[in-house]
Length: 302
Image (cartoon, rainbow, N blue to C red; front, top):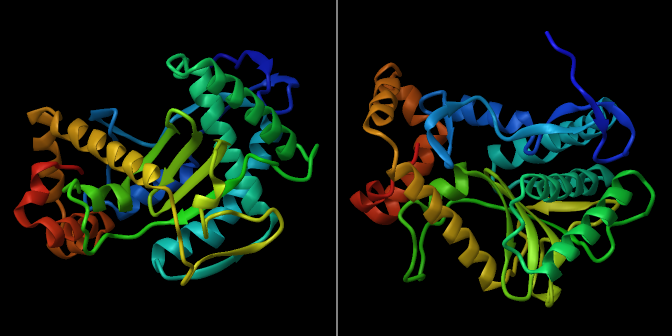
């Protein structure tokens, strides 16, 4: 077995053998598989392949990876699992949540930059991303007390049970409840990191002109509460962006080969009906059927 080449850690900058870092923590894909009707997962960008987990790249040294792991454990146990067990849960948090969410925003930004997926953006946005990454880096290393203007936001998600939107998508609940999605969201004047982790949406401000449009979602550096009966207010542009992401997912799964669709059908045949009905993926599909009837099957997703 070959040894990993030494390189500079993207976070602490020390020369070291880099760990394979997950952009979205491994526990998320483990939960996805555990709660899937088929016991398998796919990514929308490669729907014809079954995958074990999400994106991972050589990124940080072992010490920094261990640091991420501490925050991820808190997030999994104190936020992710309680909110996925009961969407109406109200949970408190400490300083570790801001650290975790900043680490996610930082990882998404670094990932897109390293992959060369920012070249289409205006120069002003690329410069803004570089400034944000530097500030987030300093915060993660305790070189500054907070992320400053680069606010971190968390929005719990649940199924839509009714709607007035004339452009609603027939796979919207499958996207809201089951999708794991990362991106850089932007308009002509604003840009942010976007990390959707099943029932939880994480937003990291990069350049936002009207932060007052975001109410109920901003995280505090030291402590606070997420979930419960909070009132949320968000810009329409975010919802439009989320619908675009759901539309892209539906198109990807619609393009799946017949062979892969047959494999999914075979996976279902191997499961007991009761097991399927109790799965989270069945619940997401059922929520779309309640909204759209047979129309829910026009934009499929596993």
